[in-house]
Image 1 (cartoon, rainbow, N blue to C red):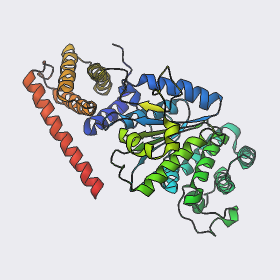
Image 2: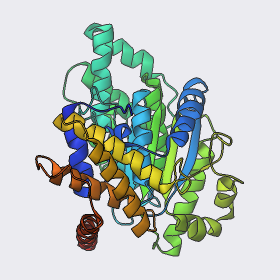
Image 3: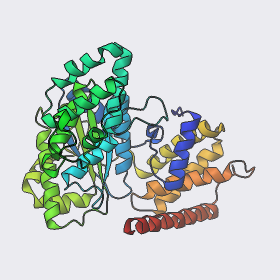
Length: 427
């Protein structure tokens, strides 16, 4: 089997991240991705290339999946595809305490802080945060046009642009002018662009008299997305990950969350959001407990079938429907992990490794009935690969007793991880 593999440094990062936490890697996820390729093809071909690319439109998709079904993994995959198409991205984890979707300013602040350019090279950290992105764009234009032309570029390419909220355009233009002149931008400008509290008098010299607030946060978000396109990038992909334990908001806050989602979906049909794709990942309870409370939102999210090659315009991506059944899925995932391990350590897999992979995949599917078997399998298989590396007996076939022992140890490790997660959330 021919399987794409990363460079050694990235391969080591992937194995560490997935082996320690059973979580998707920050970069290089395409090397270990399995089972959702049909969704990704639709996202790339129908949206990133056509709707957002040629038509400069926008779209909203709701991503549904139970805990362990791969919602975060899927968002990482979409981000990877978007980066390879040149899109800026922002991956935002929503929580009831730190960044709830019912609080617009918190959402804007999270997007501005996590806005990222595509990484310059494999495994390299991307430029992240709106101020850093704007500086990088200035440096990019300086390399293309020469430093003497930068002031004209800011004036002609942005100051006259059709950015909805004028205070945002003035603040961003002032920041760009300072960066083009190679002077340190006013710290208050950077704070304002990030949505942080700024005294009303701090930016008067720049023609900015409004402070970031709940009332203007969506105007700031729309202006940010318009700015990305006006400054020469193909568009933005915003990825919101609603954690499974955040559905306990009170009725008022839940109503505000639903209203914000409805407004966001409506904005996607207007020209105010050029070249923007929104993905909002939720557990199935969101569709049964939250959406039915708001008929206007339910009407926008209803569809006879979920998104697929046959129904690419559907608003729902259902991660309970994957391209492969559970056991073939785990076998294919294991093959990809073997390729990553070979890239990391230079040891090609033996036939015994592949037979052990098949045995472990079958044992995991037989013993775990829910979708969390994917994370379980990743930890168990990578742990097995680590334990057998350098051991002369490590390439022997796994018997039933050894498989049972591996599954028990993995179950105990995952139980400890989940307990630690709960303790951290409650702190």
